[in-house]
Image (tube, rainbow, N blue to C red):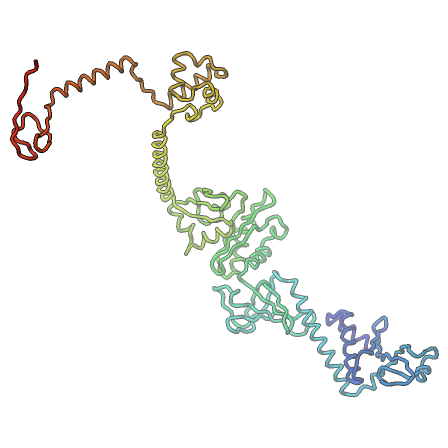
Length: 501
């Protein structure tokens, strides 16, 4: 039996992929289940292995008592002394159980328990085997299809003789790919789910990581970190953009990925069933990176509109506009995702029109501002734009606050006696006043008086030439001496003048 046990454990550990601890656990569970089936309890069952795992023994632990109540867990002192002369009441003793005493039903129970333990171990080992392989590429073969989901035969597990089955959901299938039974399918492990059956391995051919793994296989420079992938964005079945950069100045990252005569990138495109792949150079300058991201279109200029909001304007020639936008906006949409900026594409003519409208708006705004400035009254020295505030405060302290007061002080020479205000300060202030204010010369006081008198005399002369007005004696309406009838009441009028003595 020892040789049979040793050979069985060797086959399970070396060929079946089981660990010694797992084999011990399975055998222990089987023996304890059989013991419980025979004796009705397993609380006092003990399983012991020898050091080299060549043999296993099953014991029944019993308490030594004086008067047995339950023979399954208790033993008379008299019987115990036959096995161990030194035992006493209250001690525990282990009695070897002969497996040959088990009936057929008991053996069958132990066998079923062992089989169930093996199945559970296989489930756990399957999940443990694949959970760390998420993101890796695996090759399988088309097995069947159900509700659009493709089930793929992935071969045999390390711990199982049965084939492992992966599922390629419809949402993770490229729209340009079709399969039939037996077709080879290469996919990336997207997720591993633990289920009652063990593990469900979810595959994908649409993720960016799938393209990354394919490129790493085709480009040795990426594998050895000479060239690194900055970002990959993809519209599965239509277009993929890959941004790469080099850690060495003498290595062209784009050329390394494309390969001689495009051999490397063609292998990638072939694996993607003809999907277009743009390989472009990553640059820390967002302007350069945005221009590269819009390839294959040629960009004339990139203008950063708002760095905080990460928005930019790409200017292209009219002939490159449709190429930059792409079919249904695909090219610019992928470029947005690749650089993580909001890119607006305009032609040169559109930019000129926008610039013209902007210039006119700016000019109108400046005109309104200038008009408002002209209408604004400047009365005090402190109101002058660009005036030295310290000088304005000194003049105010000296009683010179208004511009007119300052000009009078300059004319009278009083300005030179103000402490703290130098001749240079006066020159600057005078030039500022001349440039900002319009000086209107007012006539002298005597000239103003003469002009007023002359105006009064002219007014009096004009009054003499006007006709003298009277009041109608009937209605009081105003009448003049040239009237014969009152225009209001119709009474006849006559005017008599008395000679002055």
